[in-house]
Image 1 (cartoon, rainbow, N blue to C red):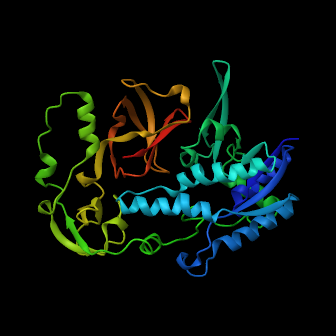
Image 2: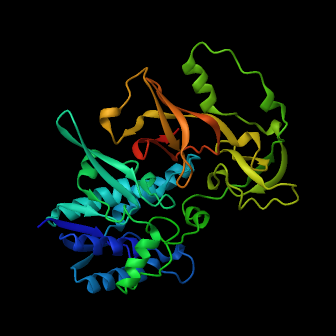
Length: 395
């Protein structure tokens, strides 16, 4: 009998995942990961992990499976929280959920599970795993979940073949309403629980306050750039190579204080991210102000009015060589090769037509349509049909 350790988060998805595995004849063990102690940064009385671990325990009891809690807060602080602070300081915007899966759930947690004699680790992610043979060897595929509305394969875009080999995604074939229905039918305590929001495992954290504990406030100016500014009508230079052109398109515009007019003050450019519109506290503009660029060196924030402001859009992005990750290693591009894909630069974004260009200097993703708010530090992931084949950090 194969043994599976399921990460019970105290939510409905992992509860139903555990039930399905039991139905399929696996020996199931429930494990709750405690990753956060510091209640001073969570919002008011919503202490998520206590309530969640309690719900996870009740679900395990109901399903008749053994349950235990593991405390991974030290690893979590080191691998996720410290990393996030460092990224924000550099003016980048990290994605904690993708990292949490790569570094915690499918690494630290998986090692604990395997030490308990598990054959597999299972989670309540909405995605599916496929298996094909290439040159006589099994290759694992990360496929989109059946529920187009909830597909979470993007969050697993950094997994490796080794990690996928040991993973199971029991609810990948179901839609969210079907999962809720099973939970109601079983009378699970999590059946009607709202989906968790906020940082993977930290619960509802107010990010600025959370960051302010580590990053010192530093007053700076907010500039507004007009949509018809001459900076957007500059002549495109002549390029010596296609690679130079892609590099130009991926780099974006460098703004200086001369380009805009001062419209307000902020408490630190490192607290803000491109495409953000809340938290600027600048009123009196006809359309909402969006951040089009931040500069942590000069501590300046550049904004533009409206969702169609030209400063928000770019046609290409670059992934540094060390940050290129192929789940399907057999499909990895050699220098000089290209590939047509469907890509996304954030969770829940519709897949976009794009072409990958691999050079020694890195991998360029060139989109058919310019994309809004391509953000440094976030992940771009690329698909062939409903299979996520690779990803990388936007540089």
